[in-house]
Image 1 (tube, rainbow, N blue to C red):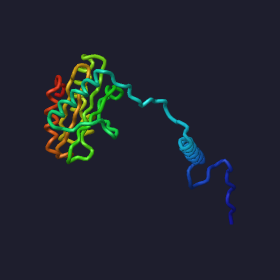
Image 2: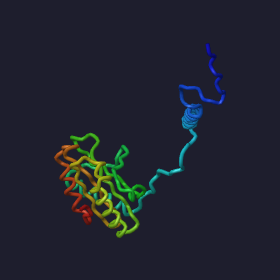
Image 3: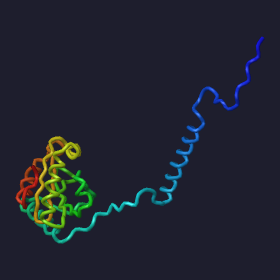
Image 4: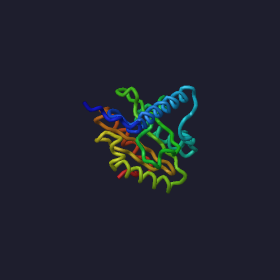
Length: 191
């Protein structure tokens, strides 16, 4: 009978992952638990990003008033929204000051929204509005809305009036009337 040869203590045993994988996995779990614990006690973890959009000026308020008057002339009830709303928008518009207007519709409890963006100059509004229209026509912008969505993008001085509607997502028959009323304001920028 032969005796088995002694094994080398430095050779990893067969079966199971190498020890460094276990250390990495346990370390990742501990780090994740630490981050969650810090968040729970109120310590901010992550990049210092200020999500606050700067306040609007007089131009946005004038345009908001003009939009409200135009829609009220068509017998729509308008109000300052009671809930947050953020449309799909191009990267240039993410931090642009804006005012929201909510159109109250009997068939839609949440109503529909009109956004007034305020830019520094008429030229900036023209350029950013046209870029926004191109963005909405692109794959990245288009996937943020139902396939049949129609857009109203109008420049009124240094502001952009934006309204999106989809008959498929919201069959309210008054949406085309809202769009038509908004298209009487300023200069169209949609393609």
